Image 1 (cartoon, helix red, strand yellow):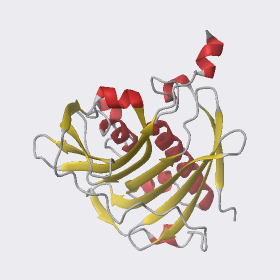
Image 2 (cartoon, one colour):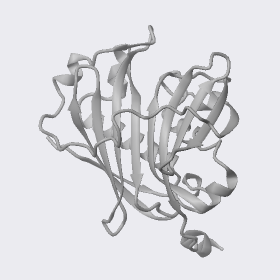
Image 3 (cartoon, rainbow, N blue to C red):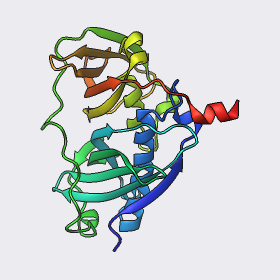
Image 4 (cartoon, rainbow, N blue to C red):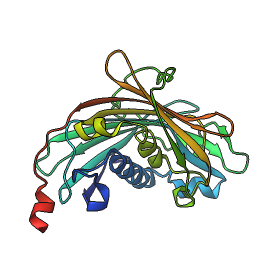
Amino acid sequence: MTLKGIESYTIKTYHTDRFGKASPAAFASFFEEAAANNARLHGFPGEYLLQHGFAWVLSRLTVTVDRYPYAGETISIHTWPSAHTPNLALRCFEVFDAENHLIAEGTTAWLVIDIEKRKLVPVPEFITQNYPANNPPCKEFPTRTVPRLRSPEHECPIISRKADIDINGHVNNVRYLGWIQESMPEEFMLEYEPVLIDISYRTECGALKKLTSKSGKMDDGDYLHSVSLDETGKELCRARTEWRKRQHTHVPYLQHCL
């Protein structure tokens, strides 16, 4: 059985930020698609879970980025299922550019939810019995848990949209990567880009919910983030990000188009 699935993607303009580079959310979207295709290969696709009243839900996502590709570049994403426990399954990702340079890595942790009851359940046996054994381990999560934001410095209101809802009936995990950055100061975002995003998903969110995104700087220079429901104050997610100064270079694809 093939352990790794390999998917190729061309970076489109709608995958990019204002600098013409793939956004962190684009990486998360590619990961989600590659994971779904590889799960089909191993016999436990999301569609099969849905037929039995279950769904995969993302518990944690970590992305480390050495280089963000520009629009027009083609990348390949390698993914494989790694270790699992009775309640949790890990999946690994590696991102390569056209010259086969490793430019990003990712690790995800997945839970299974009973769709009707909206409650977590153990990973079904029809998944664990087909789960590949002795797969390579994933890149470890940076910390055991994502720290809680206790001293927010910035905040921004958000409203979840109907268009954010996915096949599982809640806001898709990719949207959260944009939400956590909404409260970051504009001048900071112009000068820095994230090299690490470590996000923990704590509860699901429906459409037309009033939310608040908050962020604050840690002593080591990293940032902590939180998105919560205004009505109850309940956290939807918390995250930690690490940043580096942007290299202001030309945008080759856009320059070519002009």
